[in-house]
Image 1 (cartoon, rainbow, N blue to C red):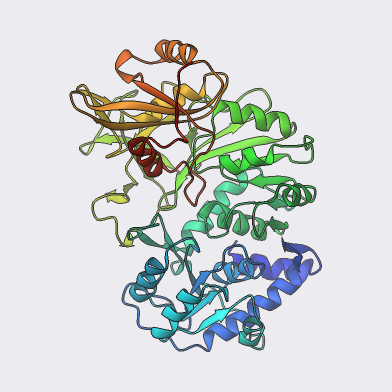
Image 2: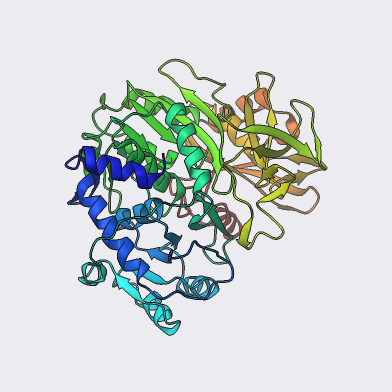
Length: 501
């Protein structure tokens, strides 16, 4: 069901039901629907900016949003989901210069931001883009009298997203409505969602996993709960009102503190491989929950799914599961499928992928081969039909003439008791070309690490050096920042301690 119809239906049938809770702001479906009508009317009245890269239906506007998890952000995101207008998602963590370049490349018809983002506001004003500060009276002043929301074209763009970019130019992509409509139909069944699936998503709303959780929840007519910023006490208060959690593994681990919670029955996680230690921790802290671990990409949508019950999993725990409903997999090298068990680039065929990047990614990332699409991830299909990730094209390490994918070693490390995190990097070496270095967190003795890995991996895949840390640098999406770890290694940063025992 299109979000426009779903929210209209819930507003008519259950106007007093809670739709969104963030900080002290609580919006019912009736109130949310009225705000969407007012935002639709206000956006429709704006003059349009010239934009060669983005085609929208007549009367639709493209607005940029850079407001983090402000209480007004879910309403603006729901506007893109349920009206003809589109949103360009700007990451508040980007440097000012990057914000300015993106605004110049794809000028939105309006910018919604915070009053503290003075450089971003100044850049918008120089480009003639109206800036609405949503943490001030500007936002209510901008709203117009309610107008009926028209039907949305399933082929039309509703979101411009970015796959990366903290210091360099990010890759921009546009997503059409029909792809998320197909995704919502598939994930509703795969994640066992109902109108009772009140959802807590502690991550940034600008990130795909959290934004998608908002769309899922509003379509169901359930309530969506988020936080302005992560706080454990506030998170526990939010979870008391919910039955489901959607979070990347690092945030899921942060939630597992205090008294176990039995009201949570479903957990969805993605963005990084769920290591066995964290899975067991989540099983203990949320004893009634099934954990749905999916692998996907912003450009591809869902790729594979592994559902973990109390005592078993739908696929081997070291894998990322089997193909998601309506998705076909093909592992290829040089345009040809590889044999089962051999490494190959992961291609998918389905109706969830984007068409292409708007800009960026000319030499890496998303590409198509006929009906098949890939982001350059490398994996292998196991004998049971499950998929294992090995790394990314270009991320392969060549050491002493052997091709090695670091993620395969990280998966082996995750199976060793006592380790809670691990990253494997390739660093330059005079005679080997590159050598493997492992950075771990945990109290497993070094001799035990080496012996356990020797059971699981051939000798040429064993790291030459091990370091311990408890201070992981993270990207804005919560993943270990490999670039900074490499910098720490080169500078012999004190936060990396050579493993001696």
